[in-house]
Length: 530
Image (cartoon, rainbow, N blue to C red; front, side, top):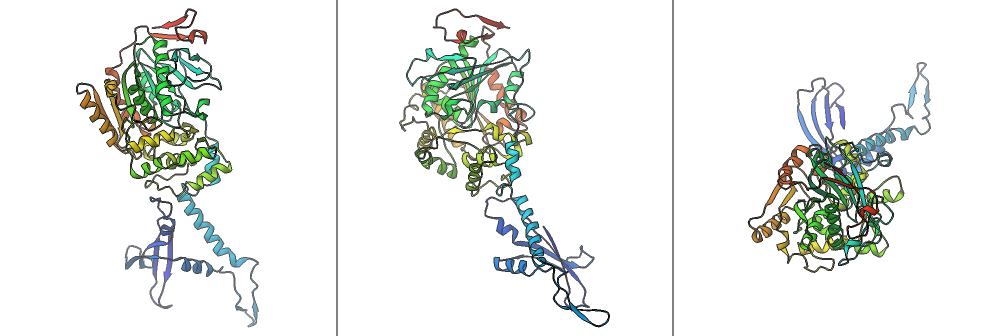
């Protein structure tokens, strides 16, 4: 905002210009608006010679002075003084109705528009929510003759921990009882590799076409047989509204899905890439006895969990228990123009944002305020940023209680807080790559480093690899504008080392009956592509 004031000490003295410039910046907190808008940096120079600076400084204004300044504004057309006419007579000019209010109103309106334009991330407009409601569906890869896509869902009541997993009903059709989802993108005989997303997300985020390439397309281009895995917390499944724990995901969902992929492909083992909560539950599943995993890429979170102080404070508050007591079993980012979305948006405004990260997207703002800074805007394309609303959805509150216990313990524990996993480090004697963004502000690097040290002490000859991703945060590494070169290419050598192909090639089971586990009656009819 620029200001200019012409100054003279007397009518005949030289004129000087006071030229001020006000910078309204997007700083680290929402309460800096007043300091930014009431400070003016200025220079003084002779009229007509702006290059000759004779003085400079800054001025601050208090609330009483600001109100006095606005109240003193007058229209140049308003006058109650007698006006001298040519004949020497006088008359009084009546002011126009409401004219006295025009200058302060116009100033306030102009000033407010500029401030709101800069602080849109805090002061949302109707347009922000309209754009959010009009967000197009998440763009996903299309099927091609050489890139077939197939889907499998586990329907019915999920087994309990310890139950026989051989009687799960798998179907190619999703239903309102689906609690697992597998989506195959066949690019070749390498793998198979299973991809799993984090808390509050679905596996679609791994295939989202929001940049030059996505992880699914990248891997299929390299000849991998890719399987997106939606475990029961995925908002694409009806089960995300049910009550469950991370133990259920680790000891039921993962073993069932790995066995199904192995059966459908004929592979003895699978590769796994899992992010955030997906990665934590893979560690829990392996420590709990999961077999058939050849190698594993753990993205951002491992068996030891450490957080910065503010993230730790949020994670250890007993908010989930309070939410469940009032009947709120899921949380999710805003989707449209409803009053609930507006209330959430206002309630989350005090969040202490990283400098320069506040933005106009209500869904992006919700994700950052509730989950933490999952991404840095400099790494996202405009398409990726607009699709945040579709990458995140309603998430069950129930498993957050176990996450809280894990954060407090500093390592994996069960839903009751018992140390039932970390005693079996012998079960982690498989190659593991630890993928971490150097600018991850949700989880600190000490967690993965502890896990690597813990494993190397017990398995000194095993392949445990650290893959640091410079300049990326928690999620941005997977959906960034330059993820192919800076992230995917760096983890590809690890995957290639363990990409041995299954002997049977491409196997696709055609109908639901044929998709049942092999201990069911009836022979299997398959289509094989090599």
